[in-house]
Length: 185
Image 1 (cartoon, rainbow, N blue to C red):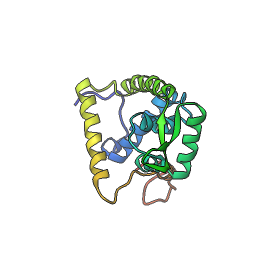
Image 2 (image 1 turned 135 degrees about the vertical axis):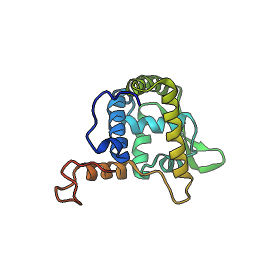
Image 3 (image 1 turned 180 degrees about the vertical axis):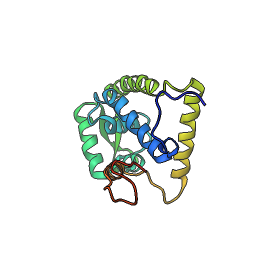
Image 4 (image 1 turned 90 degrees about the vertical axis):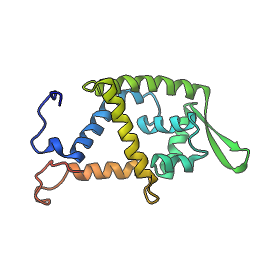
């Protein structure tokens, strides 16, 4: 095993939840600046990406795929429309339905942010060799795909994830033998 950049807290160096939480926090910190040019930051970026890649036909499908509340999705799309990055268009197959379609400016904005995110992620994953980076991504894809393949599994809403992280990071001193600040996801 390659030398670690710093010593991890004893006992937590093998705690999957703690490691995953730390990796998520590092990723969000490293990529925040890259996504801030898109309305609503990371969430706006994800919605714009879904529109550019046509991964869903409408807001409801996009919200389900991204794990977003439908009401939040309306505001996100509204902000992207105001910024000229997406449009709502009537669905030729069902006039009651509105398609979320990326504009030419949306395609350009996504390309700029994707490049900035790539640089931020490369910096974050710098301790790994290139082959390890791809293996890491592939393993994450398999874990997520396996989870989503379960008929009952749906992407967690970002609000649920945030609340879980908040609850985990602010445990009381007397909570099940874990001290203040203990993080076990």
